[in-house]
Image 1 (tube, rainbow, N blue to C red):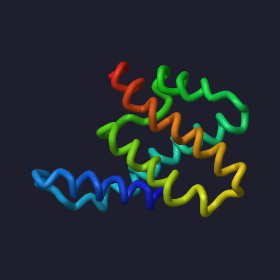
Image 2 (tube, one colour):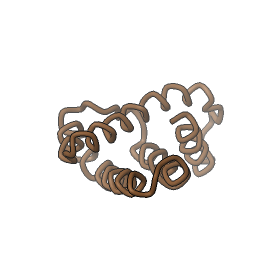
Image 3 (cartoon, one colour):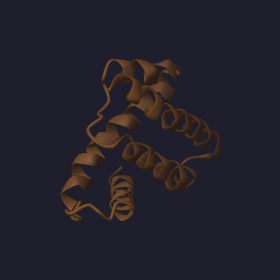
Length: 115
């Protein structure tokens, strides 16, 4: 989660040259902890076999939304593309990728509707 947080923050700061404060190192640990909550939600959904848990977690504000939504999308996308296939057996990787894809897709839609 820390590597994903750093990659997403770096991408965000690189794409926004108007940012006066380019030192995001202090944000990495906090953002990493937020990403862990998303990963725990994914684990719980896969463990129980209920993807609707994600929708409920978003509706009930049980996952952190303290930053630009694109940062969460970028961090989860980093995990999907850089970590999943290297860390999991093919069938588990496929399930995890589907879950990540779903969460990446619904974050901007669902969260913007609630905030």
